Length: 130
Image (tube, rainbow, N blue to C red; front, side, top):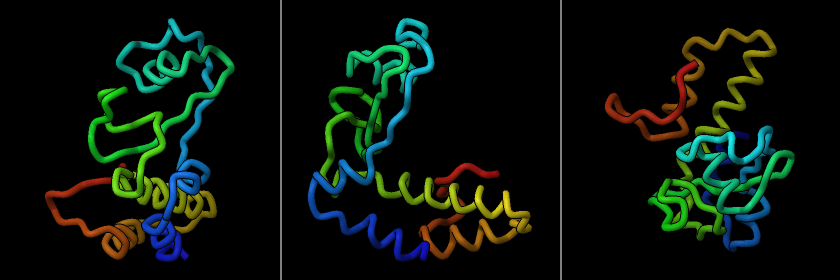
């Protein structure tokens, strides 16, 4: 199932699919002026002209976006601009959290999942360690 999810990530063919399936959203908990200017949420709130209670959105991208000057964008990216590694890590983190909640001992499972789904070596690190 995880491999199928990863395969689907790699085969989004148009921007409408990308926008529908890969847009991250977050509701603002504070007024925009309370967010530090370097914090993602503050940057997005300012760019999208949103305030407390409203939703901001973004996409994870490979290269720095011209608008945000960060590796996330408010513009729908193409398949080649997407940071698929970030999306895959998120899927792995969600799976890990779900398994942890069910009480499964996850020592070793996480490393095996990472090695089988993301090409990594000792110098490459992508997902948060739990």
